[in-house]
Image 1 (cartoon, one colour):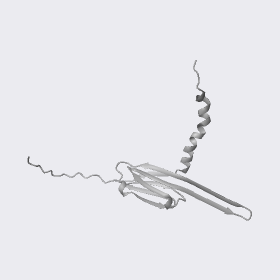
Image 2 (cartoon, one colour):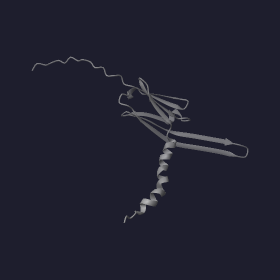
Image 3 (cartoon, one colour):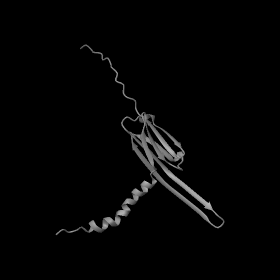
Image 4 (cartoon, one colour):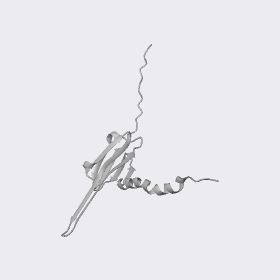
Length: 138
């Protein structure tokens, strides 16, 4: 005879919607993005409509590009007999691991029409140089 645990049936399904709320909120606040590679650079485009440049922090550390910021939207409408005000705030963060050949020291970024474009050049090929080594007499 197999005995069922009290928590294996009812409790996980009862709390499951609450467990996934954090992930859904995070996905909603995370800006849409795309990454691509050209012959000489990696390009990351992130949609940030309505986000001011001063509310965006871009950093690169240990081959990981991180974009942090805060979305702030406010809307206010007035009529003769009515008033409507709506405010939404939320922090976001996206991180992208760069390939080993990315040159993070030359990263650049542009914000235009609500799209942040991050460009990371590829490192040039290491040129193999022949080096003459002096032999010391013992």
